Image (cartoon, rainbow, N blue to C red):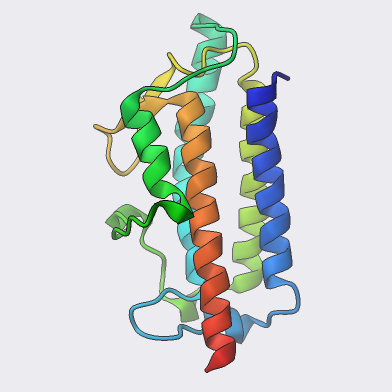
Length: 186
């Protein structure tokens, strides 16, 4: 696997480990608790990532299969266009950008969510995303493009989707960590 893909795959494995460590020894009630009415609970952060991730995964797997059937194929390193780079940047936790989640990705009420199931689902999602990265070997990560499940007009490169998904997950795991601190402090 080339370096760029290996970095994406490693990123999903690292996020799986980070999520596991985040919720270790945290009970369900704490994960469901919101520090205030404007803040998601830890389990809502995870539910949001699951919803967004699984919806994107379907398109990702389809495009990877189509790429293997029809191309395009390419050699790394892959550099992505300005829209792709901007989108990845705004999703990073350090970007300073804030925005509401598209309604399609809104989490359920915290008292309706089962924290252990949400975490297990997130960990399984990371395995599937890492598998997608491995399956993209040999494809042109820049020229294969597809739209967002929430905003179909937003079409970015396959490789940029890997980067955006990693950034999005880092963003919300950081949010979950802040929420956990706030819940423990109150």
